[in-house]
Each structure stands twice: as structure tokens, then as C-alpha cells.
Length: 449
Image (cartoon, rainbow, N blue to C red; front, side, top):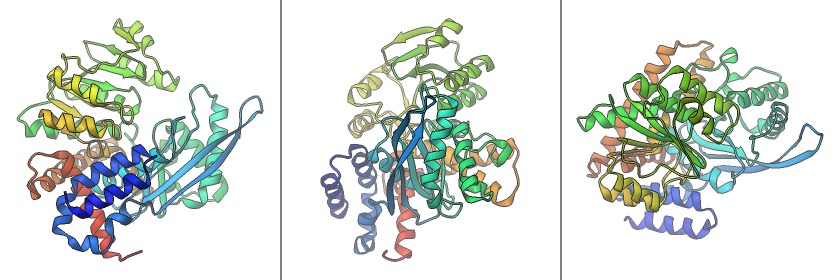
């Protein structure tokens, strides 16, 4: 490993030893880009890595709201504007009880390279709160969103920072956030948020975009291997918008998702989640903030496994984790390898721990990294920004073709970056390098600040 890279990783580990998620992703990215630093000693002279691992701006704030009984509650809100070297900060908001500074920082760091891979002029950011919307009424969620935006609105804008949705923040929450932003600003800057409703500046296929993009990327992986998606059986974790998009596009292309999981359960549907009735029911479960899949199993006569995960099942061709970070550790990785599955396609942000990823890479399984695979969501968000700036709305076919082309290009530049540095078919390192090169060169050209 390049000595400069090794030193910066060591410094981050020591300085942020209590922020495990952030340290993990810094180590994973910087380890991959070591060959770049061998060829570019000027980056060390300019202190690029030391700057790159620190957010340009990170702040937290108090979010106070009242429940339906009039009882006040206080949560912590966050926004991390990590790197704006190639464009305004861009990244989602996550409302989940486990949100903390480390999670927001790692997500923003990852977002920087993911956004660079899209080829669009957008920097990296992320935000959210430890507020848990599960079990809360519509009025409570609205009041929380209004309070959150009241603290945030001064620091965002179409040319400054453009938040979007993430876990716990869907179209409903974006609507409440935008309504409060418009009330406070007194104008209609609809480019300040993406993931909006179609009636006020949203883009077609945005809810499906991340899942659709993942399947388009998978298609390129399969093509490279002389394989095809038709007839493939897929296991996904989660059943939110991302997993739903995977299910929908996979079924359109002749594949089928036969396993899906919740936080503490999974179902097996051998016929596949391919009909409109099944896909609509998955959406209904999300609308009801369900965390269990028994209702799905009961309705469609499927196997239901409480308190279990499906890692290790050997009747699928592809694993696609779509739920949350660090859901695959060394134990799960061992089961995946033993299952004989050939393809492991990361969709959620950092679903695999570094130890598990190392094990999977040694096994010879073909792995596609999340920062490339799930870039379709932010890609369509950026397309929404373009539509907002031009005061127009593209058709569903136009948006989807742009998304497909973007994912094909992300695959291509990742593969080319790996080959450029003699790494062969290493999509993980290739994606890290392709994103890093763009951001690092932009920082270098803009001088030291």
C-alpha cells in the first residue's frame, strides 16, 4: 500500500476510533485508490487525502416537536456537507432511530464518490435525524419535518446543497419538508429538494430509480460474464422502495425475486414477486410502516421464517442486499460462499463489513459495489434538478433511458479504471478509483482551502 495512503488511514482510525462506520468506509475507499497515489505524488504535496477525509462542513441541531397529546419531544438533526469540489452537495436525509454522527459521515463520504461516478456535477452530502417515524401519526411526522426544516433551510439551496429522501424519508416527508421550506423562504425554489411529488416538480420513476439502476448495472455484469438476466432467481433484503424497484425491473426483464426479508424475518415466494398484486402489496406494507412480512406470507401462501435471515440458501442465482449498512458480516459471508451463488450485488449503502468483503473477494464470487450499483437514485435526483431548472418534465421513457445510459456508463468507467491500474475485473476498486480521480483532480485544480 502507498505510504501516504497508509498514514492517512492510520490517522483516521486513531482520530475517529469511536466512529466505526466512518472509519470502515474511509479504509475501504482509500485502500482501493492506493495505486492512484503512486502515480500522482502531487496529491500528497497538496494534502488531498487529509482534506478528503474531513467534511467541508458538518453540523447538528436540535429538533423539537410535539406529539398528538401535546407532549414535546427533542431529537437531534444532522447535515454533513462533505465535499463540494464538483458541484453542490447532494445526498439524502435519513430518519431512523440509529442515526448518529458516524453514520451520517460515512454516508456523506460514500455519496461523494457515488455522485462523481454519475458523471453529473454534484458533490457529496447526507443528513437526517434519530427520529423514528414508525408508529407516528401523519400529523406528528409533519410537525417533525417542519421543525427539522426550520433548522436546516438557511444552509440549503439549488446551488448550495440539495437534500433528497433516504430511509424513513419518502415522498410524504419530502412534501412536508418542501412545504415548510417554501413557507420560510417565501419563494418557489423547487430545485432545493429532490424526490418531490409530481404535482410540484418531481420526476417520473424516482421511487423506482435506485432499484431500476441496480438491475441495469447487474445486466452489464451478467453480459460481461456471457450470462443473461432472464430466468435468474434473486434474493433481496428489505422491502422498501429500493428492493421494490429491484423486484419490478427484474420481473420486466424475465427474472424474479424469490426471497425478501424484513429486520427479523424472511419469506420465500418460489413463484416470484412478479405480479402487480404482489408488488402493490409490498408498497402497502411500506405505507403502513410494517417491519414484518407475515401478512405477505399469509396473503400469498408463502413460507414465512420468523427470527431468521436467508443467507446461505442455495436456490437463487444472485444475492442483492437492499436494506441497510453492515448487514453482511463474516458469518453471513461464509454462508453466502457455501451456498454456491455466483453473484453478490450490493445495493444498499455499505451492506458488507470490510472483513466480510475481504472474505467474499477471496472466494471468487463476482461482486458489484454499492456506490456504483445504487447510483441510479441520485442520478435521477440530478435529472430532477435539471428538469426543475428548465421548468419542464420529461416522459417516463426519457427518464428511464437516461438512467439506463448512466448505469451502463458507471459500469464502463469502473471497469476501465480497474484495468488502467492493472487490477483486472475488480469493480470495487474500479468504482472507488473512478470516483476518487474526478474529485481529487477537481480539488487539486481549485487550490488549497
